[in-house]
Image 1 (cartoon, rainbow, N blue to C red):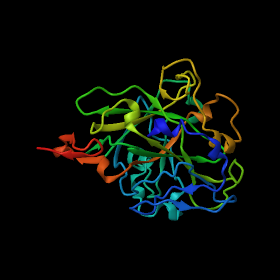
Image 2 (image 1 turned 90 degrees about the horizontal axis):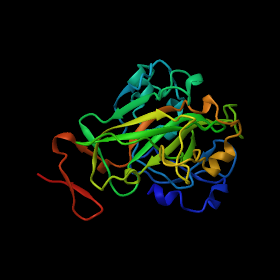
Image 3 (image 1 turned 180 degrees about the vertical axis):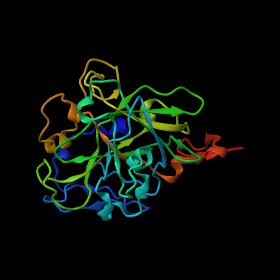
Image 4 (image 1 turned 120 degrees about the vertical axis):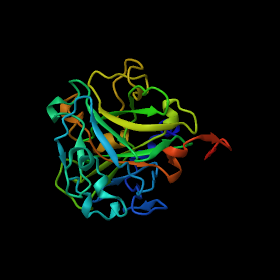
Length: 296
């Protein structure tokens, strides 16, 4: 659970030899990457997920003009074997039709990031609801370089209930997208994806709760949180939290400036097949306390 993830000691974040996020196999298993050098892969909590479970529908929200999409560079990456590249949010929402796993900017241009009306996107799975199970339920990629973390918030719409408040969870990992030093800012100049795993229980939802869609919005420079620096927007007076390891590789952060508030969302993955249920039969109950099964 995310709650436990961020209460762990961050001493292990100093380890350079980390575990690559395994997106290339359906039964995702952790893959060990070499120590140091390029590509840069940082995955201290060994996040894995099913690469076949990409959200396949989306739309612009909050006044977003969906014209700022671009090639993420993952089409040449063996890390993205089995991922359906046409399900990149840039392609689904902005029509950036290049089959390259395109991403979409959550703002109407980088200069608007963090300061204007909050803009974003909505994503979902055709004919299916997302299901909250014990542990992480959702894994999201946002494209960038190892030297430039960007920030965003999410909210979810439960079936037969109102949409949640905006919620922030720091990125968990960074994965080089193509295995080469790209010359971008950062210690080895790698371009790739930051990945964040979300446990919907951390948003206060019960096991077996179902959701119509997930939305991703820009974070604002005025957003504040409780003493942890993450969680629901408006929870206190604390500025957002920056993960120590990713903070080490973020070499160009200069303060609360707009370019770090225009996150570029690529793929939205359900964590496991059990995290998706057909809408036509989405009457669920918890049978063991850990699993959800469909009932008549």
